[in-house]
Length: 363
Ligand SMILES: [Fe+2]
Ligand SMILES: [Fe+2]
Figure 1 (cartoon, protein in one colour):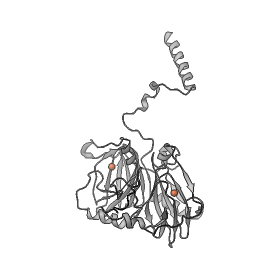
Figure 2: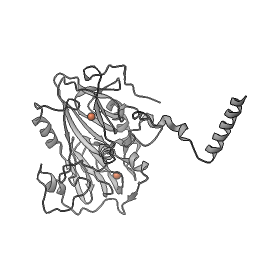
Figure 3: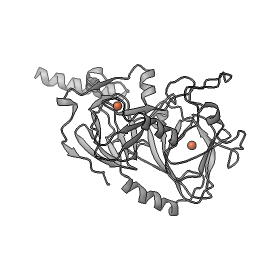
Figure 4: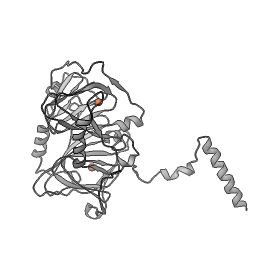
C-alpha cells in the first residue's frame, strides 16, 4: 500500500518537474555512456549509385542561385544535413559554360577533384584551375565562385563542416553583389607563394588559421606517395600523408584535417579507432574496410562515412593495383577540446571478424 502511494507520488512529481522543463540527473544517467555511441551510421555512397544521379541532375537542375551539389545524407542522422555528425560531403558537377554565383559562408569547405579538367574555383579574387586529384581550399568566410571554361563536365567532392557550424549556431551566409568576384590576384598566386615544400615566404607575416595555400596539386601528392611506397608506414593507415598548413605545419583548416593515403597492393592494415568522425573518398583502386564487423567493399569513386570510435581496418584487395584514399576529419576540433583519443584493437591479431556486408539503405 505504502509503495503504491510512493509510486503515484513519484510519477506525479516527475510530471510536474518535466512540465517546467527540468529533468533529474537520475533520469539521464544512461546518456553518460562508457564510450561514444554515435547516432550516425557507418555508411557508403557507391559511385555506381551516385554517378547516374549526378548525370541526371545535369539535365534536371540548372545552376541557378544554388550550386548543383548532391549532399550525402547519413541515414542515421534523421534527415539532418550531415554525412557525419560534424561534416557534410557532397558531389558537385559543373557543365561547360556554367558559373555558380559568388558567395561566402562561415562553414569551411574543401574540394577534391573527382573527374574533368578546366573548371576553376575563385577564392578571394584568385582563380584556381582544377585537375583530377587536386585538393583545393575555401577557408571560412572567403568569397568564392566556380566556373567551367572547358568542354566537359567537371565533378568534385565537397567537404564542409556545416553540421558543426550549425551545432555551434555560428552560421553566416552572404551572396556577393555580382555573379562573380572581380579577380584581384594573378591565377595560382597562392601556389607561387606557399606551394614550395618546407619553404614559406618569410616576408609574409600574417599566418591565417586556415592554410593560405589554396591548391595542393595531384601531381605533387602522387609523387610524394610514390616516393614513400617502399618505406615503413603506419600499421593502421598505411602510407598516410597529411596536407599541412605551409607556415605552421599544422592542420590545413582549423576545423578539418585532410589526408591522402596509399595502401599498397595486397596490404591489410590493422584495426584501430579514434574519436571524431571522418569521410573518405576512393581516389584510386579497390579494397575493403571493416567497420565494427561490417564489411564495406569499395572501389574508385565511392564515398564512406566513418563515425567516432568505431573499430575500422582498411585493406587493398588488389594484388597489383595501388589503392589511394583521400579523407577529411574533424580531428582539429577534437584536439582543440582535448577530446582526441585513439587506440588499437585488442582483438586477435588486430583484425576483426566480418559479421555482415554493407548494403545501401534505399527508402
Ligand atoms: Fe560555397
Ligand atoms: Fe585512423
